[in-house]
Image 1 (tube, rainbow, N blue to C red):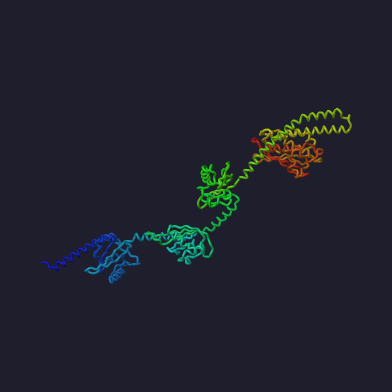
Image 2 (spheres, rainbow, N blue to C red):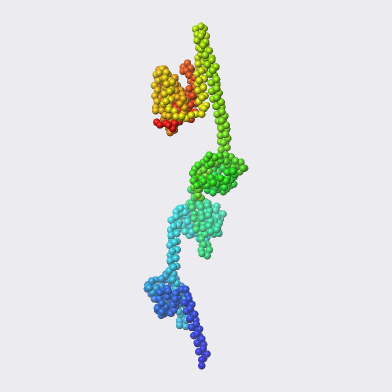
Length: 631
């Protein structure tokens, strides 16, 4: 017969067995290694995670001292730690503040983290040790520390930028070499100080430091530019970027702050702006996309806009509507090969004012490299007055050409039509002289002589005027003319004068020029005749014809040792019928040098004189070489 006490005892045993089984299930299901140790240090229970962690089978550990899992160099200390724990058993981490290691069966040590929990049982107090392998955690922490160290070294090594770490309230946590150089503080002077000490007093009064931190906290990043102050009180222009730093949960724990000193750049920009503003021409800078980024006061005057009405707008607002469709293509073409050049070469360009009126412009383009990329600086000049002057000049030129043609035609017709009556007058006078010479008194003979001389001079003047008017009337031919052949003809025509004067004429190897043989002969003959005529009575003329080739042109010189010319007469002598001497001193019509000038200028060249009285004269002139010329 079973007693009530027996039944209660059996019930308690069943409950205890059930609890132990439940405990074992919980231990076995734990993701951590579980080792249950008795007061004597013997292992009472382990789970599968313990087998996996330490490499022992379960039956190899049950009943063994827990010291088998402790590295040899730590076992002596471990016994004391275990005894200390048992005197006041309570849940805690084992070895807090110390690195703990477990010893695997193969003899290798593994870093671990241990949590201790006392368990009271009818058989005494047991200790449940929860063991975690922290190898991966330590590896990750070491990687983080190494990354942080590399980052620290990198930050410390940066000298061009101030790189700081701030706490959530704005106090300085780190200080790099760039910050020291830029702001003048040593690390020990600034660490722990509030970053607001870099702000100007007026910014502090306005609460700007706190506003900047708040903006960074709200937006994640806050970029500003302004004046900052160094330790010595000097100011510098800086760009500052403040970035908020948050943990995984999104809580703000600090800020990073990067500062760049742009004082020199700002000073350069201010000087550049002064130059731009001082320019007498309109200047504007635009981006690749055609956005106006900068302009000066002169441009405001040209187009009638205020500055803020143009900044940021498309350049097409200044382009007449009829040209706008093509303008972006021209802009892209410039940026594809940016070089300094005039815009719209060969085309008339116009600007559009705010009031809708157009005006002619001349535009120069210059590429500029900026921090934002390639831009173009354009100079804009209002050429309204120039266009008006060009139109007036063209009208005057046309009128002058018509007048010259009329004068040439008049001279030709007048000189040609005067030939016949002059010949009649000259013939009659010569007949009178022939028939009545010696029959009249001396005064009558003198009058008849004057009439004959006058008729001859008039004939010579008309002949020269006719020759002068013919040059340039017809289209100019560009035949290859041998100057040597032309000189031969000229010397033949002047042979009597050369012999009478005892002149010595020399010349260089002469080129082949583009022109007309008759005119080149006439040119050389008139210059030679001039030297033969204006000679010193006591000295034979020496004349040399030189030439210097220069590319497609040749500069000739006709030098002599004759009486020379005063500088005040250099221009006058090339005029028609201009004389420096009386006919009794030196005969002639005074048209020879004018004829030379007309021939040379008609060929696109020029003629001038170099001379000193009593030292001789050199006439120089330029002619275009023929393609057939070979020195």
